[in-house]
Each structure stands twice: as structure tokens, then as C-alpha cells.
Length: 163
Picture (spheres, rainbow, N blue to C red):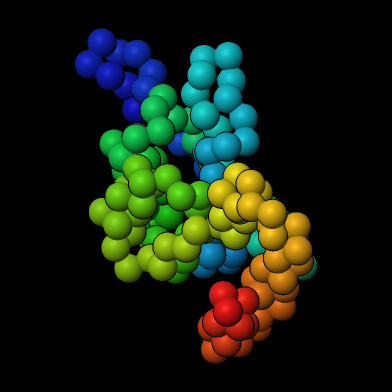
């Protein structure tokens, strides 16, 4: 637990022996997302999710943060490092939060940080929906994103899509 100078709860990190063991086995790539739930204390729930050998999502660890800022995320990630024997994930997938990005760069400098495709594509209608051609290009965009298996395939498909 992270307390402020007056002894009030600021942030919480949770992991038990089973989740730590799961993280050791399946924590190479994790998703970290605070958009799930906010409790009655307005503390966003921050789960670390991995994928097990059956392709199932599993909760590795989680936390509650008082603010979605770099300081809170840095505390959470540093606590992860302490709990996980100093082992950072090899890759982490997040939304496009700059506070998360800054904390990841600081605490997990060798971790590959990627943005979640769901969060990216969720913004497409907001950004392009007002254009007349949006409905006709949307399936093409979906194909470029989901049907490209390599970086080169994506780049080629993207170039064709843009033209």
C-alpha cells in the first residue's frame, strides 16, 4: 500500500503467491488498462493481464490508483518490480495514456511498449466518421489492420489503402 504524508491510502498493489507464479510463467507480455472499473472511491482498477498456455486471459496482479498520473503509475510499476523479483515484462500493451508511457519508460526501460489496437480503432469513427467515404473505407481499414501478418504486409496494405 502507498500512503500519503497523513497516512491516507493513495495506491494499492495486490499479488498473491499463485499470481506471482503465474506471472513468472506467463508475464512476458502483459496488458495494463485502467478503463475497466472505478469504485466508489474513484480509484481506477488497474489489472495486469497475461495469457496462459491455453490462450486464456489471466489476472497476474492488479492495483487501485488514486490518480492516473505518472507518479501513481510509477509507484505501481516499481511495486511490480519488487514483487516480481526485479523482472519487468518483455512487452506491455496499454491505451494511449501519456502518464503510463512516461512511467513505463522510467520503470521498465527495456520493455517494449505498444498501444492497444482496440483503443486505437475505437477512435477511428470519432476521427473519420464525419467523412462521406468513411462507411466505404472502414472495411478496407479493418482488413489492413487485422489481415496483415507481418510488418511488410501491413506497410504494403497501408500504402494501397492510403492511395
